[in-house]
Length: 606
Ligand code: ASP
Image (cartoon, rainbow, N blue to C red; front, top):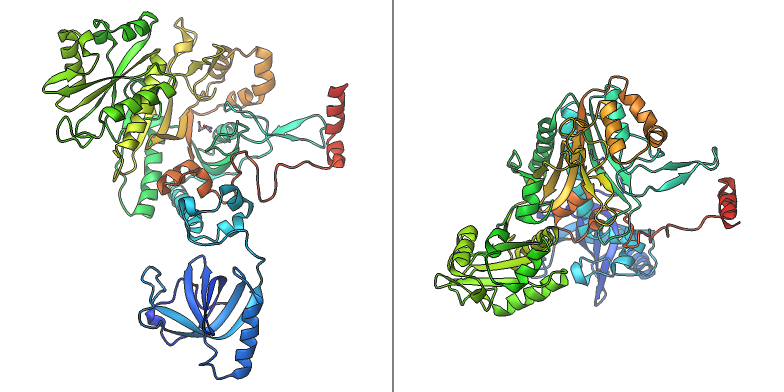
């Protein structure tokens, strides 16, 4: 071995021992001829000292002196020497190795580093170099303890999940990367076939169809740490490729899958935090999520729930509300409790007049007309518009919102969906502004009772709420409005973020065919796109269901990182470019010709 210890290992217990360390020269300081180097690796930093005065072997001193002149920061060296106490007063309490140092007797340059594009130091947040620079030289960025810890943490999460699933009899199966497109609602990345010119593979948006066919194949407990590819528009915290913990089981219902995931996550929690994760996770229906929390990914760790007060305020004389209501809109209200604002009296509140004015501006920025407010002071609702609200209306509001002294009522009016969504955003904003989440543990919630279909708000086109393989929660084609059918699906929400989604599947090929038809697919289209899949289902597909958890997002929330890029070794930047290998990149014409893509492009031009 080239080293006896890592750079994070030496303690006073090692005093007097001869050791060999290898690592990167992070910093060096010359104190009147005595050279202090911070030697770093993934485990820590150890101070190593070259003191020519004390060394007896003059030839060695000269050799080392000239060696130390030849390399710069982040070069790799190995040093051999003795562990000794640091000079009194120079110990570094923040560094676990900070009591000791290694007195160098010999050293070797293992490899040199060019001058650095940025300093590899323990900066955080705004002190870090720009993200594009970090991504361009990701290997240097990964040398920072924070990044290295993130990757190790991610590994521990995945390893704990794998251990649990393995123990529970699950089989990890790799499914193809070169596939026929699996519709998960996004665009596919396409791979041209050289051997069958003019034909293309798609990179999988998820292993959905393969895992279902594994169930038909009798592999009744499957999982995979699976890479998924979706060619969506770049958004700040998305990646074109991401990792799912993908699971599928036969002969189960939704409670079995949910129970399994609760056990997987409990074992992850034990491993990572050394504590129990409270299970079962609470369940919130899609209807309640939208109406009480204004989102399908509710964070239930704080109140600020929404209340529809349309039936009360329609009896007011408030023109603004009436205008909205006449167009079929709704009014929702939130009670910002006095204790949330840490107020001790009506005047002493964190959401004072100025803050309310700012919230009104914020609401306008959300596309709302504004925001109406009232405050409970002296047992009465007060505000500049309260005169438009007769006594019985005010009493109705106080009762519905359970308004108490110092509470602030905020009203949003608009179309139902706009009012609810703005209410959901307002909850998130206030939770952050009022620091309601401080000290709160993570919270998982199952979102259940989702519809099977939804309509595209722009085109009115019927589309699936999740994907077309979700089993309907009832019988299709029996006379009711099938487009309003529920789906046997469930989402896993963590701290107000969707981190997983799954369902029971249509194992009956006829039900699957009906779903495709409802989505407007012709029988020819169904046959050409999904004939192989319906065929598989027709050979005795067992009842089955599954789920996939987004690993990147979950780890990022656990670590509290700004973005999922912080927990991915080599992510793409916000424009989905790989800055290190400069992908995507043009390819030589000869390669395009081989794939017969040049002639395709040429044909189009003609
Ligand atoms: N394949 C689905 C997805 O990626 C998850 C599932 O239904 O298992 O969202």
